[in-house]
Amino acid sequence: MSLSARKLEPVTSVAKPMVSIENVTMAFGSFVAVQNVDLEVGNGEFLSIVGPTGCGKSTILNAIAGLLKPAEGDVSIDGAPVKGVQNSIGYLFQQDALLPWKTAYQNVELGLLFRGVDAQERHSKVMAWLEKVGLKGFEGRFPHQLSGGQRKRVQMAQALITEPKVILMDEPFSALDIHTRHLMQNELLRLWQEDRRAVVMITHDLEEAIALGDRVVVLAAGPKSRVIESFPVDLERPRNVAEIKLDSRFMTLYRDIWASLRGEVEKSYASH
Ligand SMILES: Nc1ncnc2c1ncn2[C@@H]1O[C@H](COP(=O)(O)OP(=O)(O)O)[C@@H](O)[C@H]1O
Ligand SMILES: [Mg+2]
Image 1 (cartoon, rainbow, N blue to C red):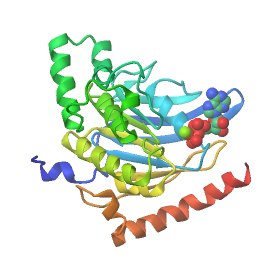
Image 2: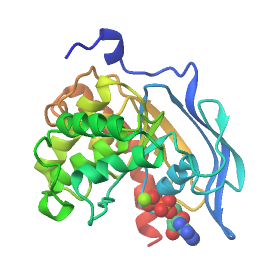
Image 3: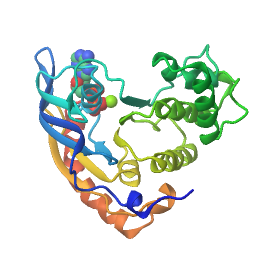
């Protein structure tokens, strides 16, 4: 695999944002979950968002996906305002989003079917993606016949096969055991680096946020959560997520970000 050096540099300055969130407030009735959030994600940037449980991470992701409409403010993708559900997005969830009655092949094929891609192109793309994620020979298996890691691989292929402009991830690896999690995080980085797209990953796992991201944004405890601070992650790629945690720069970053996050986590414990 030949990757240009340019592609491996962290994206820290946002010249032309792929995702732009301007002054966004999200409310459920009179409950204001997040208030006046400004965030930009560059093309090819991997943005990690951390914050205490219930602070509005999923809500922000849903606003980008067009699943929830902001009470105030604007969200745009590649310069176009987000109105309604976006199909330029790939989604990776914590839970298994696979259809249990469809095979690995059929699950990976779904996004292409919805987009009306013809049968021959679907077939070649699905087979190529199953191979890329290490599932050649498993195409006929149903989700219950696959391990947790293998199901996650199917999900990754499913999210990436449509070549989305933006990939949204909501705690994508938190249901996996630690070894499988490291394996899948490395797999994800490998796939993402082949063709860097804008990623917004939310997680409550600070190590994961740093190990994968170009930048880590910290959200305040809710209600009325907001962005507190943004930390560039100046660690070269490709990265090995298990090894990078031993790097002294990783530990310094961890300490700095935790100093910012800690108070918010404590506030959220206090209110539960
Ligand atoms: N559909 C909803 N109706 C009412 N309140 C909601 C709804 N969805 C989320 N909330 C509330 O908004 C806040 C943020 O939720 P969420 O974005 O899921 O948090 P996170 O993903 O950071 O854990 C929480 O207090 C949650 O209870
Ligand atoms: Mg959530």
